[in-house]
Length: 343
Image (cartoon, rainbow, N blue to C red; front, side, top):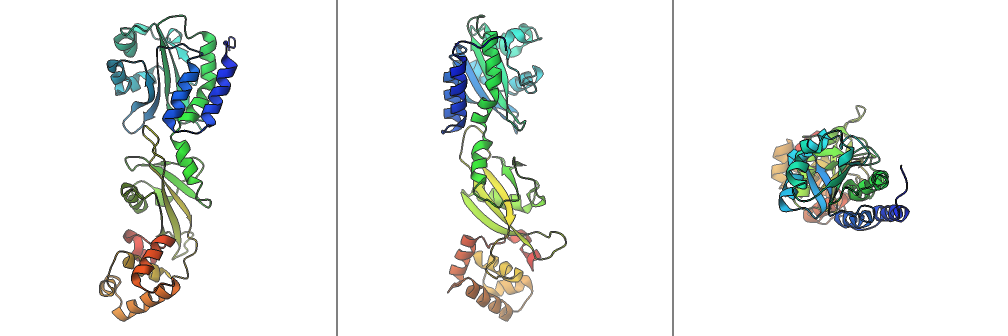
């Protein structure tokens, strides 16, 4: 670092406080720009988060750009240009004058920023401590005097804190901590795609296209904030084993947060219910009459009647409706796609 810029220490402390403080993603990003403006007196600035599904950068907060420039910022052409300039790989902050590429060959500069009156700019890729590329901080000034080398270097040092402040996974990780015995987990994006959850391993039941993911995505689509259910999983050739699947929706931080976490944990208390009784209980939850249950699982109605009586006794429920309600409450429901494998 060439030198510490005037007021740099105070800004660094303030950025650290914002990164660890309360508020949603947009509030933290907005506060970051207020602090960084004391280092770089910019006329326009943006903090973007990359939407990997659509390969576009979505502004968390943006100031000072006209509509045409904003349109370019959110285009795939801008995403491609950011990659070509190395900002998705380098952790260093770079000014326009630091780039090896002539500025007239940079479309965003030549067609949008320079015509808007800007004379210098700074960009830095935002990466989390575990190496995930989140997005970009960009600033533009109407003078070549800013950003200075010292300000550029300090902003590069502060970039991990800025990334932490806008990390959309940050909120979802707090949600995941509710399930203390989770052994595996994934995140669900807005498109229903499973993504790795930092700190927890993957699980075969959470692979893309699995029945568990389908059930979890349906619950999220139906606005269930919390829910758990059982799912059969044979581990080490041990039959009739279940795991507990917990689906938790997260805070809707902008712009494209993960919508939920799906966690795998031990089955917990089954209230003495056998695999067959869990199967039948699931059908009770779905409102099936005994005659239909008998036909579906190829047993007599008398056998189903006996199983239902055992279920009511074990759940201390006077009626089928109450048993079904307690099944949902206790997370004893086994979704239909694989329920037959419990028997």
